[in-house]
Image (tube, rainbow, N blue to C red; front, side, top):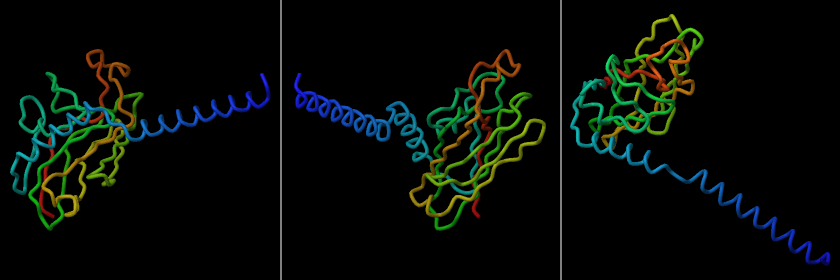
Length: 195
């Protein structure tokens, strides 16, 4: 094979590799899991169908109507749970009255901590902006999480909340033989109040 043909073949293979990397990058950064989209759209529709007034409280758990506001990555309620467990990244959609004022959002629940899984970080993202972060420590009380939702996020009557718990874990690995799910935060209730 001549040198010209080898260089042409080499250039073709490099070009093909560049196209593959570009396609992979576009796919990895722009694709969306259709099940995530479906579950989040269902929860957002349930939130839009609710006409809240402030203050408002939403309770989560067995047969609670507010469960419909939970998007992707929340476990179904199981007997013995006092709320609903999140996974590592979970979404919820809350109906709010469109308002020119900020709203105080309080989340009651607790992160999964245990001996050997002593600290867990939790971050709340409200309508795409980081609203707050907390650290739960084994053996210490976990007060409710409170953030201010700015009026710019409530203009359309819907607030998207993403709860990130990167250290979600399986309690089975920490001595609980009954719990085999990966859990992050046990959500009991959410309260919205005017600020």
